[in-house]
Image 1 (cartoon, rainbow, N blue to C red):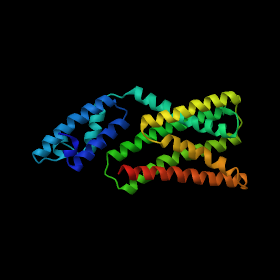
Image 2: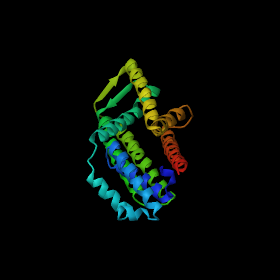
Image 3: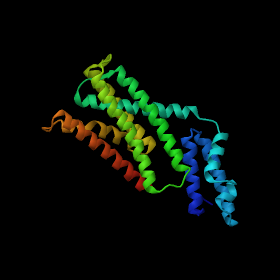
Image 4: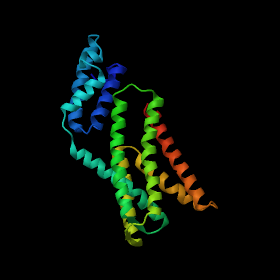
Length: 249
């Protein structure tokens, strides 16, 4: 028998449990084992007319928390995603510099990207844990995922202003180095998109780099370009996240 024979409530609980444990940093193999075992128990329980609560013995949220506490953290997974997110953050500057000139990184930018990546990781896992352990309306879920996009974007915009206002040592790669790093970055973006089966990373990079570049060909002044570029960036990424959420649901 398979999960499609379960009630929608049980299917939803299993899916939420998987997301909760994954966002808690647990090993994927252990998650699969636990989910498969629980699925079998739920199938047998529903045959006897019992509910999800009858099997877990408590509320779904409490069960998820207790199960998560009994499992070890998968540090390799955390390190892997941190590396991907950090590289993704640097991809924004790399693509931007390919469009506008030789690749350069200031120490302020490097520190800022690392800090934003850490904030984004904890915010992402926190929101997914919150959503998976509670019954929320689509509007509330959409607002939370929109927040997930807005916070790092706001930090990136703040970092952009900071790098323009504060002078710090700069590392320059030159034209050849810029193109080499650029090609490797594009390969990375394509690889991550195929591996994760989502376009979120390239979409974010595109909306963070192309709007201002394309607006630069207009007659707008620098302030107008920055304002409209930011509006297009926020709107584009927000629209993508909302459409993705609607498609999943």
